[in-house]
Image (tube, rainbow, N blue to C red; front, side):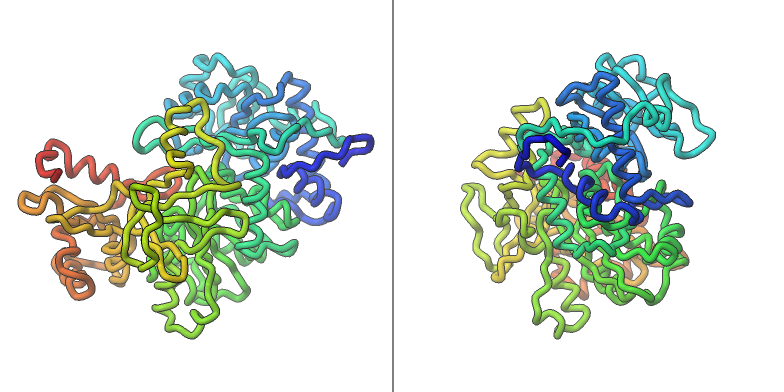
Length: 535
């Protein structure tokens, strides 16, 4: 709190940078290649950034878009935009120019901070952004074209390192707009509040056991749910951020060793690529916590990560829940189980975070399904770490919150101990001859085959059964696998009616955040064959 200010009891991530800059001024806050910033320097750069925004006309509530990789200015923006009174709009760095244009115009962003390597994503439509007042070029890597505007470091030079008074008047004020991937239409802007961001940042620290000694490697994109709120959570604990401009498996393991990394996060597809990289150590020499989410990890993946000596934490959530909102909290008795059984238990999505309300699995009438580990229902949420709504989209917001809860669209069972376990997205359940088949269950069996790197299972047209499972598989480099062999493997490990009727070996299509795009496969298989869909 600055001298002369009236005390306000607000929950806001702004308190995190203030505290850490005060408590750990000489401690390394950010590592980026050869650059090192202390917490004092981090705080001063945030102040310069925020004051420069105010000098350039930012009004409270203005949207500030950031099209940046995992570099220091992206971390600085997560505090400076809030301090200036704006709302941060992180943009996926792997989108098309048209998608970037849509997000900038839909959000009405007045300011854009753009990495010069990504300027080609903005340039084709730069003249078609009527709300945009100023573009700031971040030249983190040399040799790229700039957009009309000002250089980032020059922009900071116009600001002051002195602390700024907060302009927040209510902790429920909006703090960020995070756009969904838009796989089924235009992306929707998910609105976060100061309170929700604060609480989930604290929740991440609790559930993944961050401390001031933690060294966090940015393998997860910061544009994705504000880096699952770890942009704020690591700072809250006074930990060290190790930036990684571009994710490359061969660059991760050397950084883990060099910087003594204690934590990193990633979707299962990221962990698969890391486990299969030649630079991967067979056994870790120091403790490492890996948090995974984004898709249900197979028990095989969990078992393989654990065998390295890493502690794996399985969490689950959506953009609409500020990132992770449940954790598969291990029970004391699980340590006595076999590695395979322990991995199977850890593959569950688990229970609510400490900072979240209890998660429910409900039927179509919003009644809780039995906790029998068998009855399917939809996962719904409420509480402090559920979004405020979709930006400028009241109709979608009302639909998402029907019945007073946020509807995830994820199908799950509820186990007797209260742990949820996803069985599918509602649109991914395969109905074959009247039988419901979980694509996740089939995928987990396929992942147990030693030659399988990645897989996806969808329902495809079948003249007799309406649809039947088909698997799309990527084989590990240097290994061979035949369709008949894999189908026989499945038939030996799962009910025959659940087994794939066909297997295709391909490189799987993925979203920009590494999730497998089942809808691409589904559209290809069903095009012109909708007559097979059963009513």
